[in-house]
Amino acid sequence: MGKINRSGKNGNAARHAVKSSERPRYLGFGLGLRPQHYTDILGAEPQVDWFEAISENYMVPGGQPLEMLRRIRERYPIVLHGVSLSIASTAPLDLNYLAALKDLALRFEPEFVSDHLCWTGVHGVNLHDLLPIPYAQEALDHVVERIDQVQNYLGRPIAIENVSSYVRFAQSDMPEWEFLAEMTRRTGCWLVLDVNNVFVCAFNHEFDPLDFINGIPRDRVVQFHLAGHEHNVSHIIDTHDALVPEPVWQLYRAAVERFGHVSTIIERDDDIPPYADMVAELSIARAIAEEMLPELRSAAGVDATASANNA
Image: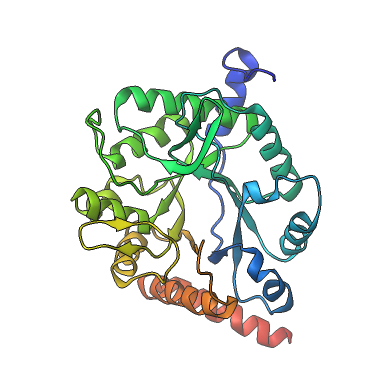
């Protein structure tokens, strides 16, 4: 396994190029791509603007998953969203994984590539979970170095998502939003703001979710995630197996008000409903954004008129 270039003229030039990259374009309203919906997606008129594909599901040499992604990519923009980068782990970065991710990105040309601010394993063991970290200076320096290495290897900026958590580390010496703000400032990475995860953490750790929303740099958020959870009175578990609840919709309103036009998806990872139900739920996000940003409604009307005239 080779080494990631950490220094030297070429490495510095690559990092500079990554950090100066243009912001990903606004995509509209999308869904997490799930195999249960392949047939509906390919058989229906476009009712969704774009899809977010789980990177690891398509890191295969061939077969139906890649063929389905190829066909969907012909019709829609996609984003690659990973769950195994383990950017905060102390284990060495997995270059086999990064090589497969780079090949996948080169093949399908996603709008951007994203993963989570977490660790997923150590000592060669993948725990298949998104595990939180202490929000402390030492952890920040470590994550910044790792993001620089990954972006340099991939030749593109990545986007990092906030995760849900259920414990707080005694070593934390800053709020999560300050950690994220400094992380993106130092690396040039983008941010995926999971609105549901903000709500979950705010409840579990007893802080105001608006402090989180207002503490994130306005120009670094390129995507919103929306999802459901399981409320257990004393704590909330991020399950992604239910409808987006009203408190998360309200927080989404605040996020749209602060960040403006940001590509938005609804994620569903379990108890996945029919495609039509997902599209109907996505229409709520679209309606909220159009209410908060009237220019979106005007643009949608122009698009609809153009389509009718061209029919």
